[in-house]
Image (cartoon, rainbow, N blue to C red):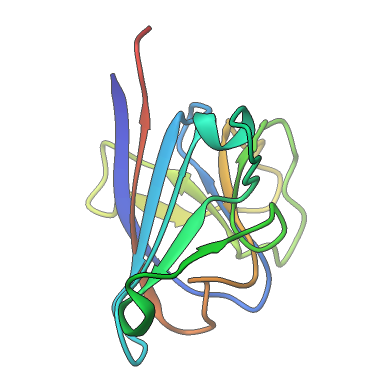
Length: 138
């Protein structure tokens, strides 16, 4: 199993986490708001009888209410290959051999595979998000 974990600051636009693989599972936690918000997505969300493209959001104040997310608001896989232009600070690249696990992509860098977090749900501008993403070996 491949695994990536880290944190990032929320942004006013979608955030791309280029972890080097297309994940089967993503969990994002925002602990800065009025309560804990958790967004979970797995590849089964795309294949179930009730397709939930972007995953399921749980909010502490509404623990029994699962809020379905579409791909624009929630999590979606991101096939890399994009060359970064100037000012694209919403794209983070996994750096496993550095002191900082993820760093902003620099101009001219070609992004590897990963996932995108939409500009709604847990992605709140300036707030800290923690995430884990995994790719199963099967």
